[in-house]
Each structure stands twice: as C-alpha cells, then as structure tokens.
Amino acid sequence: MNFQLNQSVEFSKNKPSYLFLRGAVDILPLSISIIPWAILAGSMAIHAGLSFSKALAMSGIVFAGAAQLVSLSMSMEGASVFTIYLTIFFLTAQHFIYALTLRNDISILSLPKRLSLGFLLTDELFAVSAPLEKRRSEYLLGAGLSFYLFWVVFSLAGILLATVIPNLLNYHLDFSIIAIFIAMIVPLCKGYPVVAGVLTTCLSGFLFKLYQIEGAILLSGLIGMLAAVLTEKIGMGE
Image 1 (tube, rainbow, N blue to C red):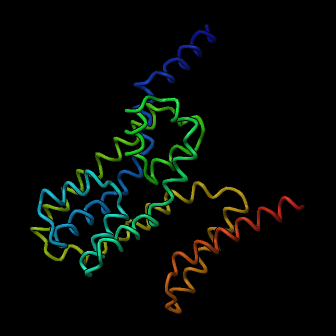
Image 2: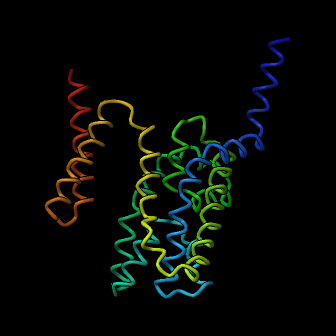
C-alpha cells in the first residue's frame, strides 16, 4: 500500500502541470524582490524620453534588467549606439555560459521550446535551475514565465508612476539590484573556492571603488575568479 502511494506521489511530481507550477513557486521570492528593479526600469525609460509604448516594449522585448538600465543611462548621457551595443554585449555575456550549461537538457527539445526558454533565460532562472533535477522544460518554463510576468507588470507600474512621481529615481530603488543578486549568490556559496572568489571580489571591488579606479567591477570580478581557481587548485593539490 505504501509502495503504491509513493509511486503515485512520484508520478504526480513528474507531471508537466506540477513541474510548471513548482517552477513558478520556486522563483517567487526572486520575482517579488525584482519588483523595485522593474519599477525603476519602467520609470527610467520614461525619464530617458521614451514614449509609453516604447518603454513598455523595451521591458517586454529586451527583458534584461541590467541591460535596460545601463543602455538607458548611456543613452541619456549621449553615448553612441555602437558603444551601447558593445557594452551590453559584454554586460550580458554570462548568458552564453548559462546556455552552454543547460545545453544537454535543452537541445533535445523542439525549436519553439528552445527559443522560448532562450528568451526567458535570466540570471534568476539559471539560479533556480542549478540543481540537475530542476532542468525539466516544464519547470523552466513555469519559472521563466512567472518571472517575466512580474517584470513586465511592474515595469508598467513604473511607467505609470513616472508620470505621477517625477522624482521617482531619487528613491534609490536601484538597491534592489544588489539585494536580488545577494539572494541568488548566498545559496550558491558552497565550498571554499566559491567563498574565496566571492569574498575576494567584494574586498577588491570595495578597494577599487574607494580609490576611484576605472573598471572596478570588471577588475574585481576577474580577481575574484582567479582567487576561486587558485583556491580550487590548492585544495586539489592537498
């Protein structure tokens, strides 16, 4: 009897509808934490001179928080289109690594599903799909669509609020960017190499910023990765 019950539970957990719902629920904390960031992106698009439709289309089509904020700020400062494209390319280059990591699980799917998951692939979706058992297409689709819905809806809220609250950018909503990455990184800090890399990145980034060294974020990230690699090699040598 217990064996049949366990079989029934395992079967229900493998159903596409269950996996879809589980993905949407698992990413919910990150979806909620993204709300201030989405509001900021929507309001910033209006302050950058975009029309209502263009601002909404940017969140709906681009669907990349950091890329949207950086491109908007660069546009407001008069940067060239080439400079903006080049910056965004390097800013979002980690998605190539995400795609390669998930390739074995995604390549077996049909083209429409691969394209859909490719569009929905974000830092947050990759974070919740880190465990191998959470890389089913239904799970990824549920998580990705849930996160996308939160982003577009609250970007719309930011667009509407920008017309009511002119100085919305002064409320430091950009802190949510830091908060959400902390929420993603902390659960992944397992093992000495990862901890060493994160701590080295934070410390070097703080020092570079203190002494106003250009490219502080890029340099601190590279130093952090080097520290993680060296720590792993030292551990393997022992």
